[in-house]
Structures are given as C-alpha cells and as structure tokens.
Length: 240
Image 1: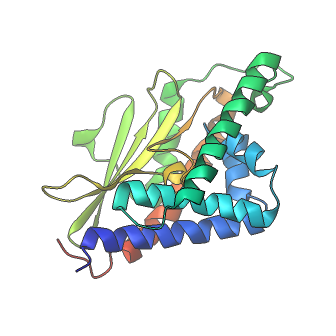
Image 2: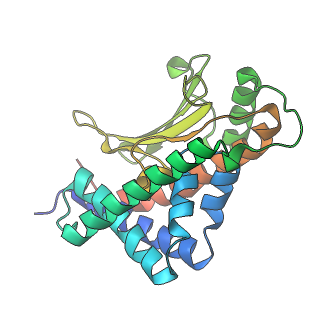
C-alpha cells in the first residue's frame, strides 16, 4: 500500500515536472529572475541549459527531478541514463565556475557604479513586510535576529518556512519543511532549487547589496507563495 509520504512525494514530483515544462517553454522566466538577483547555483544551471536544444533541456530537467525523487522518496524511475545526465550536469556546472574564476569575470556580479553594502537589518525588515501577505506573522518563539520562522497549519500538517539572513557564505536563504510528529520532514528542506532538482536544501542568494533588497525580497515572496498555494493539494486527503 502506498504511504502518505509517497503520495505527497509523487504530487510534489509531478508539480516540479510541470514547473520545468513551463520554465523551458517560456525561456526560464522565474530562474532568470533568480539569476538576476544573484541566486546561488542558478547561474550555472542556466548556462548549462543554453548549450542544449529545448527537447534536450527537458530530458536534462527530468533527470534532475527524477534524481531528487529517488533520493527522497525512493522512486524507481531514476535510471542509468538519468545518472549519466546528472553527472554531465555536475561536470558542466563545475567547468563554468572554474572558467569564470580563472578569467576573473563573474558575469553575475559585474557593476558599473559603486554599490552600498547590504544592511542585514534592512533586509530582514523588508522580508517581514514582503512575506506578511503570504505567510502572515512570524512565530516569535522561533525567531532570532538573523532567522524568521513561519508556521502554517494545513489540516493536521504544519508547514514550517525558514528565512535566514545571517549566513557566512550567503546573504539570504530559505526553505520549507513539512512537519510530521515523530517523523523527519517529508522531502527534507524544500525550496525552489530542491524541488527542481538543481541543488539540495535551501535556495540561497549571495553578494547582495542595498540596491538589491527590494527586488530580492519581492522575488522571495513570489517563490514562497508559489509553493504555499500548491502545498494544500500535495497534502489533500493524506493522514499520518
């Protein structure tokens, strides 16, 4: 008998596949916005995808999502061809990073004018304001000066959304967790890059400046709303 966790995983998996179809057919509108705001890992993904035709892009995207589903929910459709594609993807991303570092041309971060250093306090305030229409108020007992936690109740489930502005290697990171009493969160840390199979865990931004605050917090709110609008269907009629 299929478990509630497996049903949730398949619904998330199918939704991620549909998200990739839309991204590829429309030339990656959401991922390009993440790249524009200096989202970590996305630049290399888009540079890799540029080397393929659309049908090949879809095959690569499917392999990425299949691998994620296999790791987290033990789906059986991650085959040897998918594994080869994933290894190719990792290798191509590594080469892109190495070439840009070697040439000292980090294209994402070129700026023509001096920029103001990011103030974490302002970023945090902007995030709180941007997320209020999406998630409501923070859970004060869980929050700190560098992390905001939101708890959303959906039936018997809790969705925990964490937003962190205090990382050493990033300025901003977020994830969702499906909280189940007595169990590890279903799907682990879920975010844009993880449900698309680009990377595991949090979606992160780095090298942000004051000028980036408005655009990145608006984008973060849109990405979080995308998942929160879909998650009730993932959990519909499930029980533990």
